[in-house]
Length: 509
Ligand code: F6P
Image 1 (cartoon, helix red, strand yellow):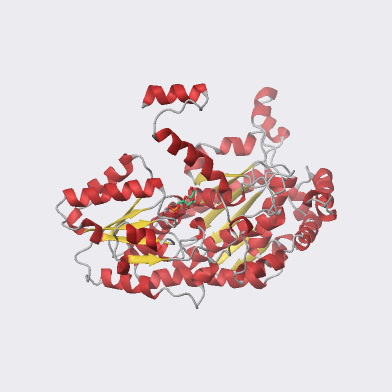
Image 2: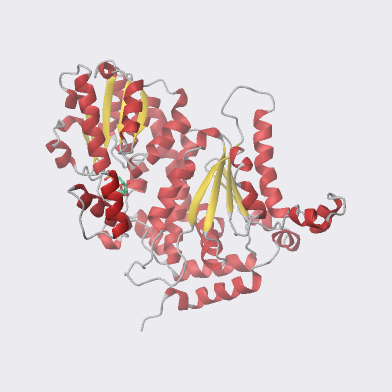
């Protein structure tokens, strides 16, 4: 029988180390190691990564390095970036990084962007971006983070098959001045096809004579877009090897480029390329995505953290949590290895999060005093995104850093007792165990380049974590069964479903 990953020496050493150090004090690690902060912080592409408040000591990092060597992280990185097959179940390469390389051909997309912005397609003031999953989350994040002050058409991203989403977007827009961008890798996704038909019907009802001529398709299935009626010169293809959740660097980013102009999109690609170069060549201990991935695997798989929480202390980054949820959970929420063998270890944690400081007044209670181990990631930007001045930004940042410091330090029972007038029960309620791990990512400023670097960091971190876990991050078979069942239900109420489902169908349809 072949040895599974969890039986290898590096894995066993990490498991033993976890058992020995599960309660190790992070503050004591700082005391024992004056070089800790320098070793666990990395600066790259305008981003500062601080992993020093995570629950890992020097030995942990050495053992994680050994795990990465055993899992051939360097080889997988090389194969990924060389365009070799890394997605075994779909027998494909994963070429999202190539989209931001100097060799990428974005000329047709750029020409369209410049033509629309110059008025060559009429007076386009509004863009309906129709897509879902990776064909929506990345583009929506770009628009929300960077497109607020863009001088191009206003964009609405419509994803859900709930008609409320499309109806609300249409209500804001004028059909005479709207372009529809249909984004679907497969050009078969039911939500996107239904919303596209809905948008075309809305254009027609609004007096547009040839509504399909107002549509642009972005897809890896150009023949399907052509069959839908879209003219060849309005189809922007991208490669089959670019995964949906990794696709914002391709023509999928079109609406953002329309809104913010080509130089912004190019800066996004360049920032990501800087992170690619860092990831490709830097040893794990100084490599931001690889080190973050190793820490993720350590906390989730070896220390048993079932979730990880991400809080953006910047309104412009409020869509980072849903974007990351797809990236991390669709990529690494797997139960078999690359070769299809069942895993007997925990794979991706559940990613969740929100915006600071809002989340402090809602979910941070559990983070400080609840019973779960939750590694927290804080995301902040030094330069404010507004010109209000005053104490706004200072308060935002001090809150962010204070939460991380409080999670780490906690408050002892004795300190709590002194604050509780000797009331023991109250003192217990006011005690914070502390020693709760967190990391912080600090951007000097938020612009297209730093956002590109940040998103490329997240992609590579996800890939590196998958490599350490022995799984394929580039397929997503788990989304299929529900789609098939929905299709089966559409034709009636199949008796083959369980009684509860049959009852619900009968009640609602
Ligand atoms: O159902 C999951 C999924 O396939 C995602 O992986 C993808 O991003 C999304 O649906 C949309 O797919 P498409 O771009 O083909 O419409």
